[in-house]
Image (cartoon, rainbow, N blue to C red; front, side, top):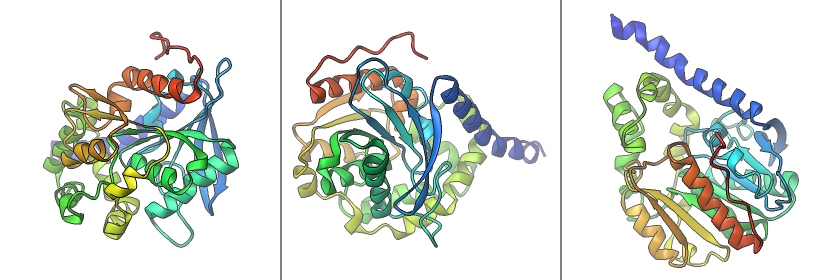
Length: 307
């Protein structure tokens, strides 16, 4: 009986969290925008640059997530340049490609390319978590002229041994019951905050929506990232990994680090799959270091008082 009473509250908790983070971003100076890009109604947040920063940053979230995942990072980056956080197609407030209920990796890449060309207007530092990192790599491979550099936070898409390497992950995110939800939360966060456990039913509903389930069903090995592709990257690459991340296959870190040997790498102890939420100060400081190298000019150190 108690479980039946708590389920509606758990389902409502996720929209409540999203609403709070949306209002927080607006209070911190972000503006919310919609624009049709690559045939998709796209939503994004923008925080204008502070000072003389000229390097734009575009933040890309992972699967079943949305732009608000960057709420604690965005305000810490505005002295680098204008900061954009995009809802990928089918997630957050962005729409779907016409006639579909999900977007392929190729369609997400086209959306990001259009965002840089039509909205930002100059080479951009791409920062992507999980699926967002996968998309960032694909954009850098296809359109290096649009990309000043990429920062990958626990990126997905590693070929490894093909789709079979990802079967345990694909089975886990089906989230058939509450036990699976608790497992995913521990895989993602190590020690998840209690409110996330309370919001478990809402999380389960998100992972069972078409943009996730249909995307997973449609992914082909040809969409994955191959070693030779990573070795052919011609833009600066940096990576962040949480050492408590058990969400994606553990071999992914070695796959990326081996095939991008010159990348700057930060390993965060006691951190899971969502460094932007768990360790925003360290993430922002690392992005500042990367931006400083790319810009070739001094970039201010992020203020420790930013919340």
